[in-house]
Length: 298
Length: 298
Image 1 (tube, each protein chain N blue to C red):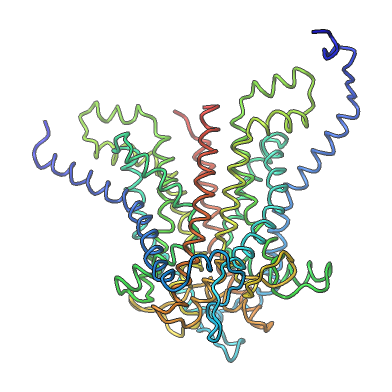
Image 2 (image 1 turned 45 degrees about the vertical axis):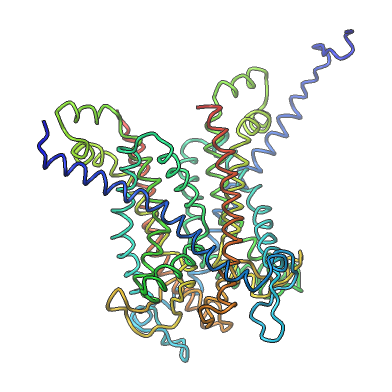
């Protein structure tokens, strides 16, 4: 039998470990509480209708401040959408190659090497977009490209989320039972037909979840877009001009001298709140989709 | 029902040659697209080396940044800031993260609270890093009055990487076979003795991989630090956790954002130093993971 001291020690350790585990809940509550507290102060001064439907974002202007968040949302989705256009075909093709075609030796090297793309600090992508992609790739293709533009940001963010799509899709493809593939091969299907008509449809929820997680990552991406896309909030779908994203705006205010408890300071909480809600919604949907797919094959 | 819609064997046109040719084109396309990301990585690294290698000198490592003479500018304060952040983040995040994972995997009852904590950690991993910066600004900088100190920065990075450590550690603990635990219990070990002497040592390589990836994520982050007002121009080295600071990614951002070419060379040199720390860390994580997968002998 355990002595009293030993039992107390076990209890203390149990309690300590529990405390460490619930720090995550405290973090979430902290985020929600902070965002709501400051956003409430913001919405006491600016009507939510103006914030969510206004088409002009100039909150720091001294003469005519304007608080329509749509230009920031537009810039964010312009870049995230462009990033998906880059990342979906490349990421999916890489996943199909890694799971269906590549010999094991290539797969062992290719997958971790692709994951390095996600490990490179995003500020490095920003530097590369600004000093290489825009002047040496975009400008020769389209002369009127501005120095700061959405396209260069979309390209580098797209590259950075390739591993999110390729790794998760590869995992999903590999979870497809072998018997499904063998059934198709037995009916004389080619490898292409097995990949695109058996494996990809069977792993569809994994593919959808991967794309959603990549989208959430692109929306929340900060340093690359702050450097490459510029600081001009604009309601446009032209990728060759300077825009501003929600994250880019938060960086701009943080770098300046905006005193606490002014409306300019409160805007970053309202924008961050909107950003948090958007990414959280996408992530939760992705988890749901992923869970359904796990239940089918495990 | 008549046979109008029935398919007979004679309706099947195999078109084998056509399908095979199409399959080869598809295989080639996937192979090429798989290597697009790696080609991009290669161009990025070559470009950075080309622009910055000659600027990485002892002077660059030992000098403080200078706005007036880029030739004499260095990363001393940024490098020390990054080392401080690494130390604080590792000291706090590793014990808390591993303890949290041990609780969830070894102690937690299978109830709604445990499921909620798990769901919550998965979602926290998807929260944009800049939102953590906003949390830190309100909680650490203003409420706890830690100001714009390197301690505030380290605590924010801790919260940011905790989900990474917890998720990786949980997976490592999950992979430890039940028989190991039962062997310890059979000898009369308490739960904590079982965890300490049997489970943790076996799970150590997996946990280490998670820690390395978490630390490398923390080193590359700039967005949450900019949000709490980490400075871009610092001519001193922090001597206590409560001193103001800058960090490598912030210094790189500042130099990249300036229009003059000299500063872009400095940014490239900074990136070389940053990647010189990060890529070896990533490589170690990949090797540990591969070694671990190869020796799963139970």
